[in-house]
View 1 (tube, helix red, strand yellow):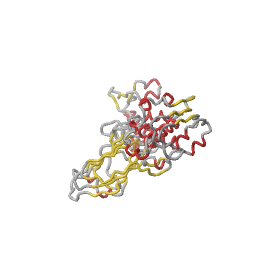
View 2 (cartoon, rainbow, N blue to C red):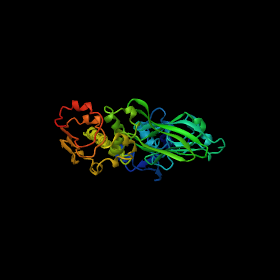
View 3 (cartoon, rainbow, N blue to C red):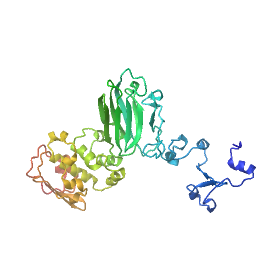
View 4 (spheres, rainbow, N blue to C red):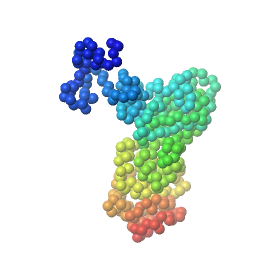
Length: 389
């Protein structure tokens, strides 16, 4: 206000030596002064923001880290991407993301109410999903923001995107930044009995593939429709990529492999990403996956698999309640590795999965007195430790 760009020069002109202080200003504890409260020379509490001097730093003056608004100047790693303000899963204020979208799905949406979201999220720890509207056909009589279909995307209970849908979004995409392993719901509320649309949701750039279709929702007419899905965590993809086709990880959801991944390993959104990541660090992760797939494939006849709603209807109680595979009654282990699998007289009526070959320490496999069908996996011939079959 005094015309000075340098606050210290202004103070010197007025003969003032003290402008502001913290409880540790005189302790020379540089780290502590960044977190302690600051006060004016008249002892009034101050909001203090610190910047490392350099090009563009003055543009950030007056901006605050962690205030719920994404500031471009602070949206870098050095400032924690504005204290998390720029991404839905890290912003912690009630007005996070509000009124920030004027352009989405390649369309200017400001004339139809704009939208809420986090298009400026740059945090590399986030995963990206993409929504493509395959077609949109709306009632021609819609002429107000209250008459358009409404799109809402929520992941892990946090709203990531809301906006009105217009026809020119047809065949266009929008990218959304979400936490690794997120459980998401994409909901569309139609405004007219004549509104119709179809969309596909993709998980972008996993396993070297640009787009992996998670789900396609088609023919949304006259009602409120939603799609719920969970992203396969990054560490699971790294663990499984040598044993499954990553390109198809979201396809054919009712296969034994997919059921084991979503219902058993991931838990259909019931586990935190911390718990999921911890399981990835389990040295017997692949053996548990192989054992679960072997059990499901053998237990269910192939024609019945599409009708299985949950793996809970397949696994015995001990497998559901206890994740320590070596404690299961039909499993024997040595140093954590599965050495024996006894599933005789178990009502098996499916097939023996090729994943049994991943049980590299297996010495005995008992599947007698069941109604198994299908080919014998060639992988059995490569199991050098197998002695009894």
